[in-house]
Structure formats: structure tokens, C-alpha cells
Image 1 (cartoon, rainbow, N blue to C red):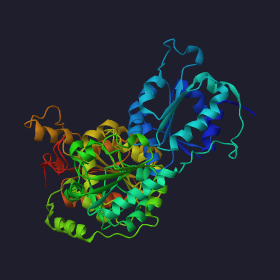
Image 2: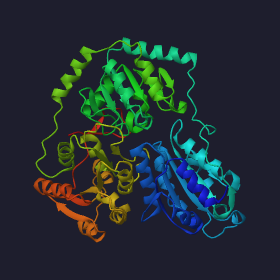
Image 3: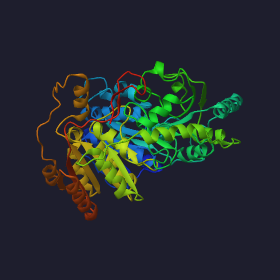
Image 4: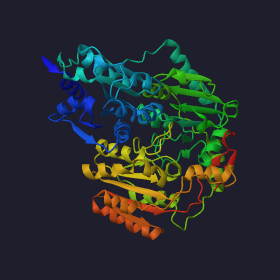
Length: 555
């Protein structure tokens, strides 16, 4: 059958099971938006294109399915560049559809023309410029396949405006003839590597399992838990791995790295074998690379072979699907307890004490959320900065895809639009958005989108009237010279009210409890502005560039 290109795009999205897209219309996608008018796809109109791609990102992280973003050419397309990089760094499956000027106008500096293929090449897993109308459906199908297979990532499809209006031969997808995801071939030497890793663990005296973000992206949490049931070693997590292993499990020691828990970092320091499961082992996790793995055997599991030996030299590298690899590791593996190692760790635990909070602080708020949300389906979405690290340190994350944050790119302004995406991905969960006052300002107008969509999001703004993490570095390393990090007073609660969202303020623990209970019982969205101390630091903190455990600030 023949359909206009815009209708072909809609049919291809429906083939892929897409029911929600995020975007902002413009001249180069007006035909596509006309086709969307009658389509059984819910379109979420955000305030800004950056909000659209972060919302699609939040949807993908929360659901495990590709998020879809649609924007126009030129400034519309360039406004999603930060979002593409954010998704690329954290291996998030996205399909971004950008409009482009007509094929006859490409390369002529036409109105709102931008070479998005060149611009996005370094921050997408793949990108396409559709110039042959008969390749439109094939390209969209390939884009979704590429986004999810292997190591996930964002894919951009740039579609000229005239391609969207041309009549194109369209054949519905025949799944029996469609492209199948690549199957990981099990090489003979892989079994030898599995045996080598098992032997290292059986000989180990002080092993540690390190959980990376790929555990969640690869849906490997169940297999990880089954493996940990046999190898009863302590478990620590990177920032992006939180939720890959239950936070309340007695084997879980917490976050490791620059702002990691002292106990988790100490376990890594003393370990003789580290099972690194789908982690990039970047500098925020390892500190000084030269001091991280020299006296340890590193068994590194990853679906991307380029990650092995990239940052830390490995003893055994296992390249493949995480679920398959962990299942093979656990097979025919005796249950190991490492009693003397655990006795040593319990001794450390008795010495680690965190102060009891008597005023309204971020750590107290996180502990309060642990109590009130225990057993309830909850998705926490953070922004970037001190708010993010306090959440990572103090929230107990029990299941995958229930803590959403920008890790590798550290994108301020990510939180609120990503929370919007999460409400569509997990509609039966309470979405709690945690932000700082600096990051909230960047995309705070998306509260209008929350109100327009009538979604239920509880936003907690940690207001210390500063760009907290930069201020922290200025405190510790720049003689308290607070250059451009002290912010003027802003009434976030009144701003929320103007956007159609209930706004409340809290300066004490009692006021916060009252505000939270009121918001939770209302059944509607709310913004709680928590006035916290401006001089509170995220602790512990490693010396930048120093070895793991070399702290510049401790509780």
C-alpha cells in the first residue's frame, strides 16, 4: 500500500509497540505532527526540546524500552544534543526523530538547517539521514533494533520534510522476516575463561562483587542475585548500579567510589578479587587507577569488549550477555561463605558511625523517605549535584529501575523531565523527584507539563541557596572563595503554584513531615521546598585523583 511518509513513521512506531512519545512541533515535522493527530499514540508536549529528550530518557530508564523523542530541525534538533549525550554516556536506548529541511535544500544554509549527522556522531550509537523514501521504514526498524541490542544507546533519525509528504510503498512488518537481535555466540575459549573466573573466586580470601549500571540495562539483577547466593561475597555498587542488588540485603555494603560509603570502599581496598559486573570502572569509581587494581585480580564482565582493560587491567575478561554469563558462573559452583572475611567486615561496621540529624538536612529527608515508602512502589528521580549523591548514599533502593539519575554526563536539569517520563513508564508507582535549587531552575518550567498532563509527581527541592557541589569544592579546595555559586532567594513554592502545582515550604523536620503527608494524601503533584543548611557537605569525599580511601572529608 502507498502511504505518506509521515504515516509510514507512525505505522513503524506502532510496530515497535510505542504508545508514548515526547516532543515539540515545528516546521520540519509539521507533517508528522499532522499524522500524530489521529494516531493511537499519546504525545507529551514539553515546554522545551531538552525536556522532551530527558523525558524520553527517563521513560527508557524506568521501563527498559526505547524512549522516543520528536523535534523539528535546526534549534529544535540542537536543543536535544545534551540529552543525546546524557543517554549515550549511560547506555540508554532512545530513538530521536528530528525533522530536516527538504532534500533539495540540504547544504544550502536553508532556514533552520543543521547537519545533525555530523553533530550527533560522537554522542549516538548510530545515526541516519533518510534521503531515499523507500528506505524510511527499513531505517526506523533498524534504529529501534540498534538502540536495544548489545550495549543499548541512543539512535538519531534525521528525516527531511519532503520525505514526510511523499507517497511511499509501505509493507507492514512481517516479524518472521524481520531482523533478529544478534545472538551472543558462545566461543569454546569462553568456557575456559568461566572456569578461570570460578577458580579465582574459590581461591580468594577477600572477594567483592561490584555492581555496575549494565546490570540494570541488561536486566541481569535476578541472575546477579542467584550468583551472589552461591558466592556469598560482599556486594558494593557504583552510582548507576544502585538497585541492581537489593539495598536492604545483609551482603550489600553500599555505594563505592568518590562519595562511596566508607565500608564499601574499605572492602574494595582490602579485596584480593573483584568481580566487576558491567561497570565502566571510571575514575569516579576507582580514584587513582594506578592504585586500584595492582594487587587484585579483576574479573570484568561486560557486553562491550572495548570496556575491558580500558581503565583497569583485568585478570579475566568475560564479554557477553550479562544474564548468560552470570548463569554460567553460578553453574556447578559451590556455595562459598568467606567467614573470616565477613568477620573482618563486621568489625569495621561496628566502628562506622553516622551522626544523628536533629535539624532538617538532606540525609534526614532520605532516611524519612526510606521509612514512609518502604514496601510501596516508588521511583526516585534525582537531578545532579549534592542532591543526587545524598540520595545515592542514604536511600535504600530495593529493585532495578527505581532510582533514575544522570551518571556519566552529570546533566543538571535532568531530574524533572526524567520524572515525567518515569510516570508514563511506571504509572502505578509514586514518582519522587529530588533536586537541588540550582538544577531545578534549569528545567523547572516543565512543572507546566506535569500540570498539563495531570501526572502525579512529588518534587522535593533541597534549597541551600547555592550551587551546592561546586560550592563544596570551593570550600575544600579554593579557600572558600565562592565565585558565582551563592544564589539569591527564589520562591519555588509560589512558582509551583503559578504552574498549577501545589507548593509548600519546610524549614524543620516537623514541617517537612507535615508537608510530605499532605502531599502524599492529596493524590496530586506537589513541590516541597526543603530549606537545608548552606554549609553542609556531601561526605565522605575522596581527594580528587587520590587513591580509594584517601578522604578529604568524612562524617
